[in-house]
Length: 444
Image (tube, rainbow, N blue to C red):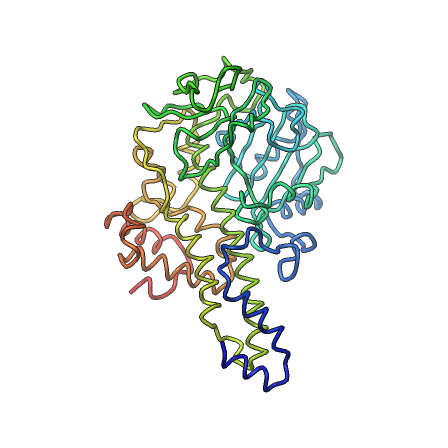
């Protein structure tokens, strides 16, 4: 860096500006709790989104698609929205803790329903004024919308920014606009008992800390979770009886399931949601950090009269930090080892596995294991997503190189010990046949 300073000094550029910039380059990215997504080059609040919701709205405006309104049971536009976006009803999961936008309508007898596919999340609340929507946008990460549940001649998805990001952009979402999946101790009215603490729910979470404030239908053997339970007077986090909510295949004893499109909150759907929601957050973070790093590198190269394509060691480290974090989650490096068989109770497993590409041997990254881990071939299915492909080229280059190294047996053997030689070979073979755009060195 000393020689860089001298060059700048000779060119008449103020050293103090470069010093600040060079310090930013040397500080680890992980020190920043939140990415500056409201400023250039991201401009999250001002930039025009381009995602499945904006495309659906365009078709609606042009009369190519019409949303049907269902008065029965107050579903409103929900069934038609799910159909238009190809979101299966079997993805339904139910959360009854008061931890979201329309909190006044949510309680253990009236849980909030969530539906999702690879790119879209839809929230439905009985008696709620709006459908809550979030979409994975290739450039802006998670973008939030609402759809008024009152019948209209021109139903419109309305984008929300500050109203959502004040809660959905924190360390819980990787510092970018994103999704939060939390486990709480819910009181009889659904309000979290915060004095007992809360937990994250993701693929690394201890099983016994998952899904507090959620309904869970399905079996899981001797493992125990926090779902299907109310935290009552006399309970504490130390004496919680998890037997009350274990291995439930019927939720009717807790609330009226007929008031929903589906009658379950499938355990497999919950586990996929845990992986996918964090994966989307990490893709968003890598997108933002990558673009910010490219911007900063361009400024530095111009100031130092270097080639525009030059990457300093600090620039490379910033790209690697984002990419490695993403790859670790993609390959389930921190996934909890299951101690018993997981079995869902809906068609979700079939619906989910049928919607992705397969290689010539019939293998897919969407195939489930559910005995020791979630997937048979532990590499995220979101590698096929538009948001993944839209990652800045320098980030994508590092992600592909890192994946190739690990799958070729050259990665950290301890961190990736969960991947056997057969696992690595199978994932590599599946990707070579099903994932367009892989670098040429993958094929050697």
